[in-house]
Image (cartoon, rainbow, N blue to C red; front, side, top):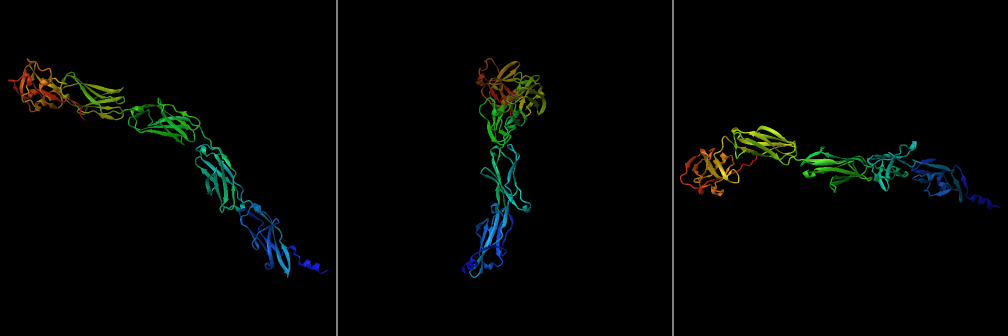
Length: 501
């Protein structure tokens, strides 16, 4: 009869009362640290303290249960129980009221948007990683990362926008973004979005030259510029010359124009050129451009043409200036002692002539100048000697009129000169009288076949020239007393060739 009341006293009981209390927030945000505390009026009497969520036991340390990184799954009903000593061996169990915790979403999963929605190659694209913080957590700092396929485009970026300066067809693919707190306690990814980069086929292929003219000068640099009016992405440019199968050059680049340089233009580069462009939608060809190579003038050659062996007073002398390779039209100017005489043109190239009726005062140096608009060039100097009367001397049977057997004229008859004492001074006078160049040799007259006729007289036995006389007749002479044609004198003069001006 007394045992039953005693068992009732010793049995543990669970009482929800104010003796044991629970302290915790009623809401938190993702990533927050949540502290749940249980305490009694006299904590010294608590023998054991346990925590529960939705009726499930929770591991705790002493009187505190800590949620270090709150998640929505941590939402629920929390309470704790305490076993406390009542009297001697008598314990009872206290239970707190239930406290409800709601873990709110700090920010929703971001949405990735692109501007523009359908980008074309070469354009810029802005990726936006959009999400929203609650008003009471608006100061929370977020970091953003952007991805394409398995590659990171930008990591821990403090802006929700990422700018791609140029996007290309090969950049097409799946993109997504991630937003997270600075502490990385909360991290959320957007859904993947596929970005299709549009490529514009090439059109309007054009070939131009630099310099921008259809004529280029030999030796200059020629640049062939191939461009497209429209077209994006990597374009393959190729340059060609009509009539040849091989390509002059190729370039693949992300550009609407490309250049091919020919460093030094030659005559063989003249012709018609075109280019092609292809960015994967088919090859497009430009119209052909004709390239003409102009050749600048080089040093022209000045020659004289006289009616006889020597220019005489009253003769008409033809001065001819010629550059055989220069591109037409060519303007030629003629000079006497550096004084302009006149000019004439060669519209189709080649040389040009200038006729001059000469007197003795026209003796002297001559030159000509050629100009086809690419720079002027002067010829070497040529010397013209104009005699006032027919010469009384000649050189016979030589290869030209400045070499041969020496003969002089007296009273209408031609005779030879004996080689007695014949030297270079005498030859120099003969060369000067004939309008030839410098004296070269004093050969025997018999070398110039056929030899003189037996009945042809020998007029001069010895010529005593000092080398400065204008004619052989001005030299002191010894008339013939003993000389045959086997002793005839000869002379070799330099046939005039232009020298540097």
